[in-house]
Length: 178
Image 1: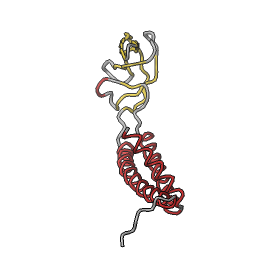
Image 2 (image 1 turned 180 degrees about the vertical axis):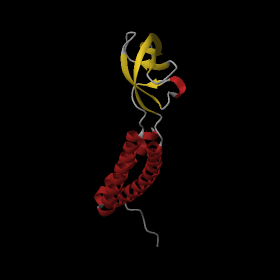
Image 3 (image 1 turned 60 degrees about the vertical axis):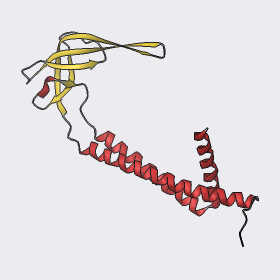
Image 4 (image 1 turned 135 degrees about the vertical axis):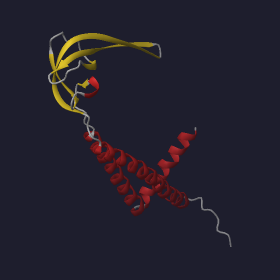
């Protein structure tokens, strides 16, 4: 004998709960895949060897403005940064410091970071350190995985939570369709 579909509140509740469980598992799979990729990127950033680590005193020999203009939706934005040329003790060549935010007078000294041995003839205002960004990527990914596992626990444990997840999942799918 065929079982007929129940249209009472219990049938809708059961259907929403089952849909919620499936939606939660599917979301957890996608979140886990993305978090594993971001953790890999974080590990790569932590293991990356910093290049601009030698702290030097940069003496400015010339400063010239670089103006960029961007037009977006009828709004024009003009940015002015300064490219500095200068000398660093222990380096024989002129060093270039691009995109400095403020104008510096000739002869002023600022702290900059170069490659060891002054390779490439350029400098940065801050040290080249990607390990903090790597740790942030790993930390955020682990938090997302932990919250995803907590969500799976509650969806499996409580049918009401699964039904709410089903309702929210159905609303999200309908919102994305229309």
